[in-house]
Image (cartoon, rainbow, N blue to C red; front, side):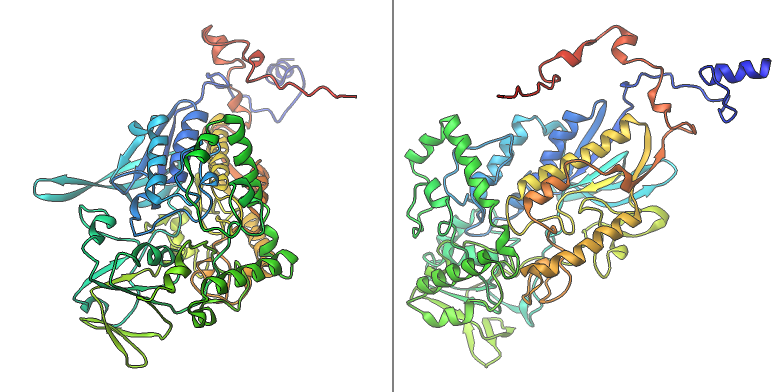
Length: 596
């Protein structure tokens, strides 16, 4: 009887020989959440969203955002080149929960975007969480503790110059929002550093204490060379062409320039002639945006139109063919004064094979008499200028290298996961992820805009918001269920990789064109883009498939329901707080009443 009785006590009145008689329930309430140390790396869009959402959704959190720059904004803080602007409609380049009705232009200048982000940081009081000029040196996952051990370098300004010091930190959960297109480097051109004039890189356009506009006031008699035909070069050329004596654009490849107002509802939404190049919002435009209902409808319809272009990225579709014809006609029309440029610039590959940009004013700038367009390859940089392979030499006062970033899909800091595996090694020759946001062997780490994490069409910011939301759900599960680790299964990573391999051959991204989508190569694996539309990504990231993960318990207890605790909520145990919260308006799920 005594043995039977002991089983009954431990097993709710039933014989259950497998019950662990030594098991004890936890002495905590089910919602008495354990402390969570969360570290966010990067204070661009993703990091700012993460700072807001982790603090909102994770109770008992200790949160820090490390940012290597002296201010927030990520690429919009570090980039200061002439003509810097968003290349998608400004009203689609803002957070879903934080609208701005005062954008000056359809394509917002970079300074306005940076100011927008600074305003978001101030409004949501992220300042105390931010550690500026703090750079992640390396991160290592510690298996016994289930924590990420971080080495941080802090830079300080002193009367004797800048000094740096390093310290250690640790996190239960790590989120990185630094992206993979952030490391720039000089192009490999012979003699580059021998140039005796001013040498700039678009990603590091350093004019000292002056803005580029202030610096350019002294360039009226200068000869300037711009190397490249990517997004930054296409913005720099029109920004500078009327501020210098002579400008030459050295171009190696070809590119499509989009026509944002043609073939869509956008012209109607912004009340413009489809053939116009007028992108500036008038006072009347902005006054209309002050009407909340009008603006809500305007933004919705604009974003819906942007999200209707995915078919143009698929091979052989009517939209792809019509888009190509429209872009070709537009480019040739704008280059009518110098039609030979179109022969060199208009691509043979499909629209969207490489990143699209509207490039307002670029083609018109190329047609100016004091602007040259050179397609002959550069042989070397000389102390006085540029020599091309045909032997021609031109002298310049200023050379601007708009030659892009390192697209090798490697972070600038080492990440070391389980068993000492280095992420940089694991991601060679190409990266593999789980649904673009996690990696097997690297528990408790999620990221935004990693490999295959961007989109070639549609809204990008909603992707960042959903990537953050997914990571927050993972952190919630870690905290609520008292888990030490959450980690994507290798098999799930392999299956997602297989999906990528079968998806991209159907798209124009797989065609032959040099693109950062393919790690800067003309052919090969697409590592930059999500395998589907922006809306598809939103749906895919809505609800985590926990069955694709493995978990380790935090506590040395075999029973998986240890997290249930002492059988009560914290409000009941302490007789504080709301003990009928489920009746609050934000908790009640009111079903719609059928009309019939």
